[in-house]
Image 1 (spheres, rainbow, N blue to C red):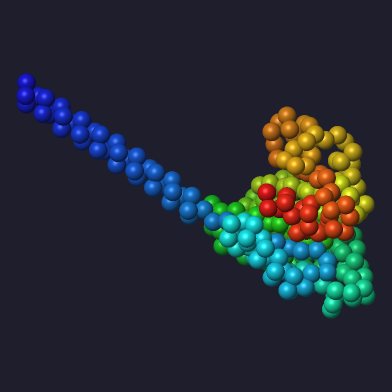
Image 2: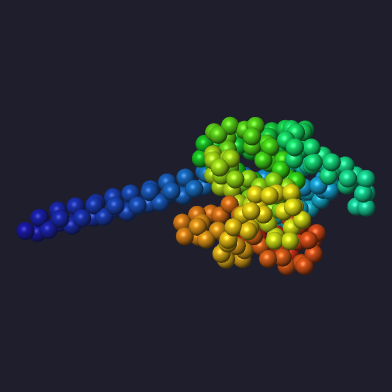
Length: 249
């Protein structure tokens, strides 16, 4: 009887030990999988941004994202100083040609930038791409030059975009969200966004979202935000009082 009891205790000990070892190995496998999943955050700007603006903005985003490095693709400006209205008009003219579908050097540069980021993340990673103003238009054109295999590794988040991106046009993307302040002047050049705004929205996450999406618990394609600055120019700024908190959130 004592011998049988000893054998039972030994068997239980080994079973318990093996279970703990299995649990330990499983936990570390999960942690290894999570840590080995790479994420890259990229950003492309709108008009009137110098290289210095991008560097400062990248640092600000890095702080917002808990130290996560943001890799920007600079959409260069024709402006040589803050009050260079001729350069500003040059930027607007360039954006106008892109709005007509022209593939410019800035589009090709973003395609290259995104492909490099996709190569870096490996098979299980993803790229979170942030686009502001004209940058959203450049992103929409760049996405048309990329394959479904590339797009399926990307999330795109646009703020005050000169173009909006829709799931119907880019079904391969992991996620698409278009943020607009309701007083954003670029809504005048994006009819589909205006149509979405007028079609009926309910409250969501500090902004508004389609009631249909709320019921289906999907990420919304559009989030319309109440302006906090009271000035369309201020509320259009990526780091302004309206888009800044949404970006950080």
